[in-house]
Image 1 (cartoon, protein in one colour):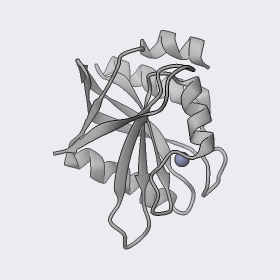
Image 2 (cartoon, rainbow, N blue to C red; image 1 turned 90 degrees about the vertical axis):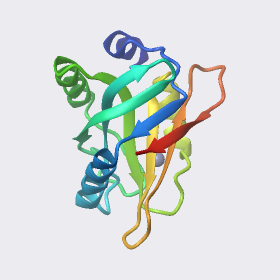
Image 3 (spheres, rainbow, N blue to C red; image 1 turned 180 degrees about the vertical axis):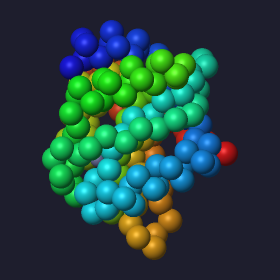
Image 4 (cartoon, rainbow, N blue to C red; image 1 turned 30 degrees about the vertical axis):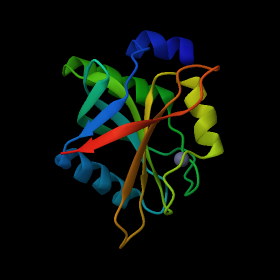
Length: 155
Ligand SMILES: [Zn+2]
């Protein structure tokens, strides 16, 4: 989907840091809790200034795999939510999804998907009930690049 994706979200913008306001963090956790034990996923929308993306809005997407170990979504749904976000004045930043384990590292299938979406930010939330959630964020620019871990600022 990369050719299409480039036209819709206007990457490549090189994002190195992602800012998550606390209300966004709690919205993401709500989506994840609703989905449990199926991996939750959704899109991150907001502003991008220089190397910093600030998430202002999130939209959930249905995990069409219905899996607690993997996720994907209907790409028309994804596209529709990006377009709606743009109408509200937000830029597309990337995706979030949950891991129902302690580990917020991208899985092999996550890495393969990331290669299809160069420049996109991938926020992974490790979530288990009664465990403090942990967040990581990643980006791959192109086939020749290694995966880059992004700085996350929760404020
Ligand atoms: Zn994953």
